[in-house]
Length: 329
Image: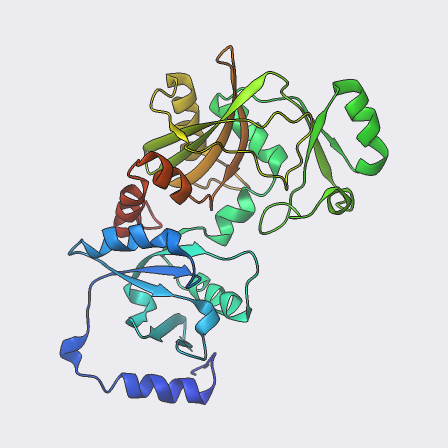
């Protein structure tokens, strides 16, 4: 029994594509780069992949599904297969070695359709997989994992009624920071009113002596870092960006205990079951006394601003990971 996900016009279009000569087919494994067409952060990684002989890159914008991109899913017995076709060529799910998933802040229906079909296909490694995003969406769990990995962590409190406790918490601590969880993407993306509507909220003690933020990218055993001065603000909410002076300063002398904690976190993270992290972005806080604290982790952190400012070869490391990784690794 065949089950077609898209309409008959898409299947007819794919049949037309299949009339092309077999000699033109590229049988190399595929790195599927799923990103908005306006997302230029993926360009350097795609260029690095295209320099390899063992894989090829295929970029897809799900917003174009039904316009210039055709998508068909079939279920034959126990096997799920997917075919995606656009002006860059055609890729079948059994050709896909890895997926780099970079959704925009607001996703159209095509994103959900492609995600659901790809998730039904086994043995595909993802950067930005929903499984890892969900596992890392709980700040309390992340703080516990960070402490087990060897990070210093700040005092936090969980309150089910944040509106009633905000003044009391800030009165005891002088200042506090709020963090919400349980969504995709992270947080509420709104202001204080939106945060206070969240039924469960974390109040984190503000680290009064933190003067710098260090952004660390872990890419399959390699570590890249950059340091920026923190904004001089007594209270910063999750939805507010940290002021990042230009240019960022590359930070090559990450203390060994900190680098070890980053590696242990990624190698041993257990979020409802062990999930190895081969790509992740950490934000760490540092004091003038060289004290380091864990702040946040993001499995979809964008490395390009750091690479562009500091010229560290993060895109090359990401390209190598996508070209060689398998989900069983």
